[in-house]
Amino acid sequence: MDLAMLGWAPSNSLEFDKQYAPLGYLPGRVVRKEKHLYYLLDSTGEERIVAVAGAFRHTVTTTAEYPVVGDWVAFEPDESTGRGNIHAVLKRRTAFSRQAIAAAGKERKVEEQVLATNVDVVMIVSALDNARGFNVRRIERYLTLAWNSGARPVIVLNKADMVEDLESVMVEAAKIAGTTPVCAVSALRDVGIDALREHVRPGNTLVMLGSSGVGKSSLINRIAGEELMRVGDIRELDARGRHTTTWSELTVLPSGGVLIDTPGLRDVQLWADEASIAETFSEIVSLSAECRFSDCKHGAEPDCAVQNAIREGTLDPGRLASYRTQLDEIKTQSDVGRWMRNSDGRPARRRKRR
Ligand SMILES: Nc1nc2c(ncn2[C@@H]2O[C@H](COP(=O)(O)OP(=O)(O)OP(=O)(O)O)[C@@H](O)[C@H]2O)c(=O)[nH]1
Ligand SMILES: [Mg+2]
Ligand SMILES: [Zn+2]
Image 1 (tube, rainbow, N blue to C red):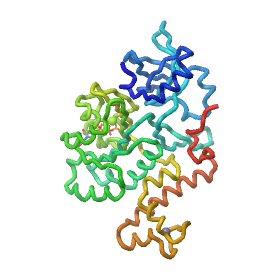
Image 2 (image 1 turned 30 degrees about the horizontal axis):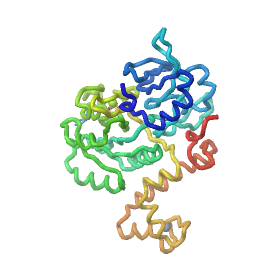
Image 3 (image 1 turned 90 degrees about the horizontal axis):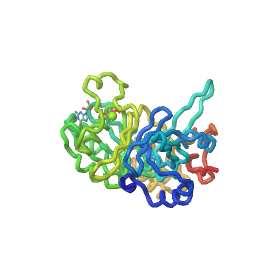
Image 4 (image 1 turned 60 degrees about the vertical axis):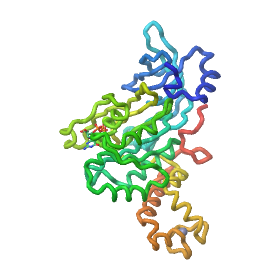
């Protein structure tokens, strides 16, 4: 298989040829992880099961550095078993992460959980089948994570067949979307799927994210035009918290394009920096430039462009509240001192390995 079809980028070649090819290692992309085993696709197009090399464990300092679905790795093949060992994770072009709490005994530690890497497009999927499904505040949180990942977000509103007043939902979505495309679709009725396919290009990688049951796997099957992923049956819909997809999985479409299905996320804790939040709330950031004071907190200050916009009805006060909530959330994290950052303010993930 042509590695470019799998999403191999010129930057990968540069790094790999210089550092890993001379050692006899091969490149592979992680398509699935099961306990401590990784399933890779390599240039043969065959799936290969590998584990991380013992030496690799000594080079990593955080769990976020371990391979995840989407990663390119350098592995040493073991032709006697057909397996092999991972020696390095290639530099991630993009990485979608959220914050997780790791518990070790009584200690609780905030850490980065990487969900998918080397992704070009993040589809943020919500379902319109009930009031719980469509929540603009939650979509805003996904948007911040997406901007932080380096990939392009697309807001997908699935189960459009279940909603009577789609127009008003679209109006609400437009208020928070900014420049992000919003696609109302129905995986069940095969409506709007072409608009999603436009984001699938040969060599590009797309990940589906969202709560359990919103239809991520159904959408992947529709985009692919075949039943690649198992979809939850209707009975499972009643039992809340039951997950149909239990692990992330990367699939390469014959027509080109790489799709990653993920299990539903229960919560979306921010792992992001201020710049990513600023992208989610770009209209507030632009308004801020018009405030009289450059350090305006958009409260009772005179000539506050943000408050003026709220008074004029062009800015929803919920947006400002949400912006503040997100900023407070990452500030609290940095206050507890567990929010490790580089000197340039990027999260710890971007720190170079020694
Ligand atoms: N009415 C309606 N039902 C849908 C639509 N898309 C998916 N469903 C149903 O929603 C249920 C869940 O779909 P899945 O594709 O398994 O959802 P998922 O997001 O992959 O769920 P997890 O794997 O648990 O994260 C299934 O019963 C689907 O048939 C849609 O557009 N309309
Ligand atoms: Mg699924
Ligand atoms: Zn202001």
